Image (tube, rainbow, N blue to C red):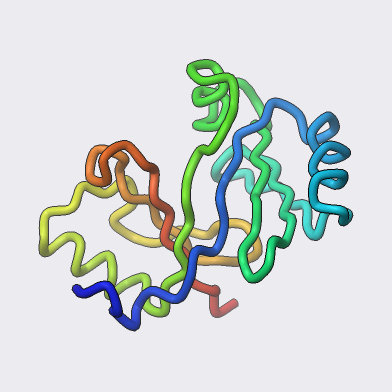
Length: 141
């Protein structure tokens, strides 16, 4: 794959782990001069998410729904901050197949449902020099 690969559209969002949406929303509303765009629970991932638009990209705030999910574990270790970078792709299945062929370590070998009906999959930080990379593609349902 080359840097101008048509599979990759844009950086969709930065995922920010926070302990409380209630506390964080007023801060981010002030920072961005806008109200939150979208709030959603994603039970499969154990998070409540809130999105703010920044140009054509977004900030996704991630609050754990309980003490057992990946965001809760992240907050225990790091107390918050950038959790992941998400890149929107045109064909998530093709990208994952290419990564598998090239031996890229994946968290998700198949896409799953994410916030806003997106199909998502995560690349393990060990494959990227420490950055959790999310791939996303608009869902068909």
